[in-house]
Length: 209
Image (cartoon, rainbow, N blue to C red; front, side, top):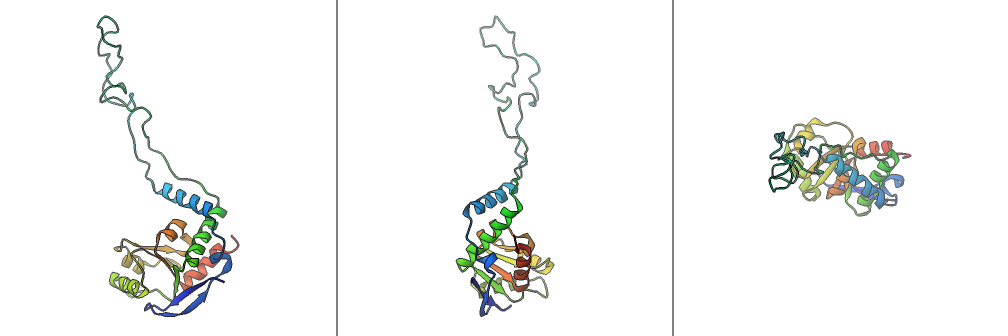
């Protein structure tokens, strides 16, 4: 059965906690993980790149010279893609890069990511993670106590405005709710830290998936 180190709010290890085999001990489905990560990165693309075709470039409404008799090649518009300042052939247009992925595959990807981090020993559980005031230095102090690198993912049960304000100035720290986990953030972090309540919530969300 997979296990994770259990820490108190001060960052001191108090023991080990057994994790659910059906969530944190499943075989890692690398293909599904790859699909989920590609889907996440594609969804982050803004899709606003745009170029103009020859019919959209301003000007070029008049034929620059007559068809015959000049000795030059025939031209219908100075906005031809062959000319400087002309339109773009097959250029990008605004589009939606989002990809669909079945719900079972999405949940399997999350399970695979959590199982991979648990197998590598990069998953830990903290008893409680509540702040009395929004203070970034408290989060930095906790990171040092837990011996976490620059990138960490904190998983909480529900919205926590104080913790959100305390972590938003730390570029390598991400905050995620237990019901909004995605494989990309799990794999991108050096360590994944779940609260005990978030751990129970993850079990509820992914149970039977």
